[in-house]
Amino acid sequence: MEKHKKQHIGLIFGGNSSEHDVSKRSAHNIYDAMDKERYDVSLFLMTKNGYFLDHEASSRVFDGEPEDEVAKQELAKLDLKNPLARIINLAEESDIDVFFPIIHGNLGEDGTIQGLLRLLHKPYVGTAILGSAMSFDKDITKKIVKLAGVPTTRYEVITPLTAEQYSYESLSDELGQTLFIKPANQGSSVGIHKVENAEEYSEGIRDAFRYDSKVLIEEAIEGPEELEISILGNDHPIASKIGAIRVPKDDAFYTYDNKFVDASQVKFDVPVDISEELAQQITEMGLTTYRALGLKGMARIDYLVSKDDKPYMSEVNTLPGFTNISLYPQLFAASGISYSELIDRLIQLAIDEFERQSKILYDFKPLPPRDQNINK
Ligand SMILES: Nc1ncnc2c1ncn2[C@@H]1O[C@H](COP(=O)(O)OP(=O)(O)O)[C@@H](O)[C@H]1O
Ligand SMILES: [Mg+2]
Image 1 (cartoon, helix red, strand yellow):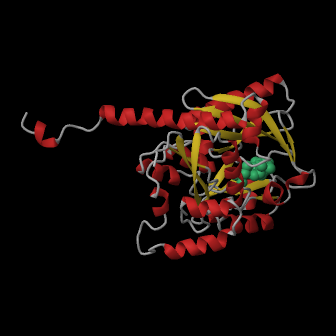
Image 2: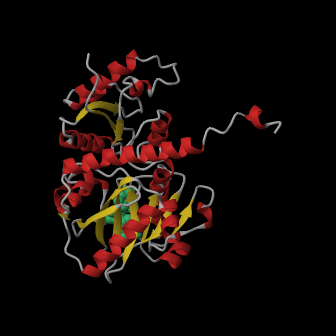
Image 3: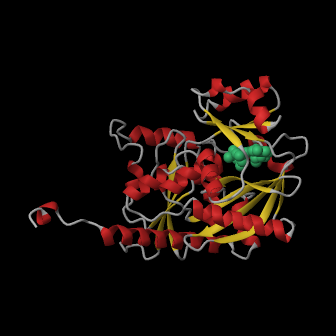
């Protein structure tokens, strides 16, 4: 049989985070936007309990077969004693040219998959291990961007060991009456609480600690405008136009439900009409953030803007959503880069970065074998 002449892309999706279904929607859109004259695509679904399915089984789920049943049948075929059982299907096809992991959240955006793909010695779309891990942790993200001079909200970090040293009173003296409680490593607004008194505070931290042992207590920006920008590139990144998300007035904030359960009340402005000055500030902050965190390929960077028009960098998403309502691709479409072109560029950026990294690794290594220079 003839070998693949087209580029062979391994599209990885699903995953074990709260964004499993979002990832499936993203993967469908990416798949549809891929030029099939240029790419052959193999699908790899990571099940909700963290096992990769092979292309054949993943395709069946992609085409609408019930995921839980397919996963059950496929897991029964695996030798679960084999320590590689979880990942063995990912290596089933040896001729993948580039992996495109679009697993949002835990395992996908936190550097884990990136480490696995590095071990497989394959190019992959998006940021490498360190940048992914830093960007997934809201505390580290803020610390790094602050060092780079980008404004972000004030906060304290608590862990189960230090929680007793803080109280609602002490924190609200420092940060204001309204506080946001957030697990450091989470997404989709899961475990996030807006609190205004000691009782809500105690409930909030108890819940947040279910998701992470590191929790941020953050000052609230009152009635914020929520703006987002998309960035694309490696060493010379470009920024898209800016978009806004408007949540219904009576909602406390942009919650899981109005992200994923019923998004019909949420309004998006793509692009948003803001002052030239604010747009420029956000663009500069975005590019500085991107460089400071060592991001590659793409990222969506989110801002909270106060009533007096001050922007605060809020969070970074290194594998942003590609669903029908997702802003990352829409913002580039509004900036003149179509969905398919975006995919082509991301794949090329993955190859460029892999080649650059390989060159660094092989230009300086391997060191001469030790016994050659021992008696010099
Ligand atoms: N400091 C804050 N002030 C006001 N609103 C906030 C603040 N932090 C978060 N929010 C609200 O909570 C939502 C989710 O918080 P975010 O930090 O973006 O976490 P996630 O990673 O879960 O999206 C934001 O979109 C915003 O509506
Ligand atoms: Mg967010």
